[in-house]
Amino acid sequence: MVEHGAIERALAALPPAEQLGAGRDAAELARRLEFLPWADRAAALDDYYWRQANARLTHELITVVVNRCGCDLAAARRLEGFVRYCRTVTTAVLLRLDEEPRVTGGGAALTWRLSQVETQQAAAEAWLDAGHQHEAALELKSRPGYAFLLLGMCPSDSAESFTARDAFFAAVLGA
Image (cartoon, rainbow, N blue to C red; front, side, top):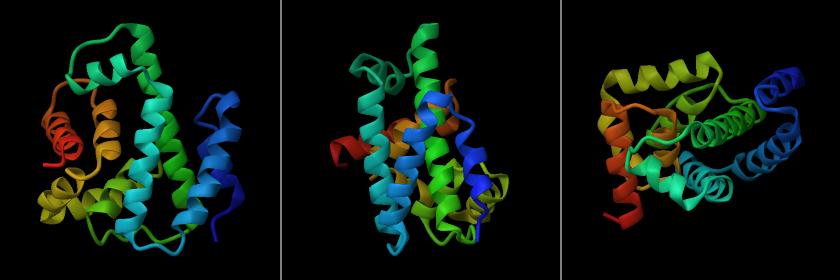
């Protein structure tokens, strides 16, 4: 069983004004995800990430991020806050679920990779390094929330950001 302090430490990555809301979000998500298979968990988290993007960021900033255009410092800080919030909630959810970070598919890999706990990230990276990048990329193509969150995590152009951008368009356009 995970210690309660681990969840509090994860939430401490956020400004104090956001910690309570993030804790509530994590508790609710963990309750909803507890008995679901990873495909359904990924669908629920994807919806959460996309709703958070639309609630926290302007449509203009979302467009700037997707089109890989530069943004001003204030917009960059808003984007960074969105990424930190979603990753912190994800970390708290995974800690609440208190499961061994065993990656069995793309949805699990994408989720564990977002965690701020090194052992959880390492499990996702090991699975990807074992030749499952294609499976994760296919999963990403149906998950606009995950794809957008990954775009927000990659401020500069990289292979990962281009993959996330292509996946975002595929997910949004239903390709």
